[in-house]
Image: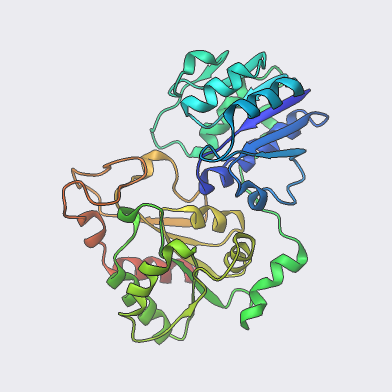
Length: 332
């Protein structure tokens, strides 16, 4: 059997798709499994023993027509798409794949042969995605894998040592986000960093080059200076930093799911989004949020600016609220 899995959503979404990938291969061990993802799939799925082939697709650069032609030639038997875009629906339909499984809330959902209910009711994204497998003839609940996984080589795993770090001896902080309103305040992060360093904790900042401006705002307010690796590591190197930390502090973003892959405790800071969306830490984590605000949630992903101009969902979160959970998880 030739199976195609389509997931071209964000980095965190792809990480949360890894249980679906493993479960598919456990159900059909002799199948040929192809995954379509954005280019960062090369890093996320590197060394993954359950992926037979990876096709990277960037809708801003790559030809949709060429992708469809490729898929038609390769004659897949089944397509599964946790991604709910219009593009996913019509690519899989036009590729001539006879069985196409997707969510009922997908754009052009009528193009799927089998639909699964999608609701933001607190069900975790991992478990929501796994429900897609129930439409397979060989579905066996005993073969389902629910833990997300990233696979590092020994050399990759030891990258953290490049900065004279010792395993489980430092706290990682990921202050960035693609969406500005999902970032906690720079003053809040600065205070937490200072308190942790005062308590003799080693603090390491991680993030992409896109996060550098915000991190510089944080560092301009700190009295103590953490190890700043923002914009200085590749994605695979970041995995190593996260895996060997003793705890992660992050906004509602991809590093949370990296930490879960490695059983690293997470303090996850929520502003415009809510746990009901299903992207909270699957295990080993707590969510810090201001409950009861009528403006929450203001969107699935957050926004560039607060729609009501207050950003109180983040401003009302105090350093003490975050630190309380950091110390609680550190002691567990």
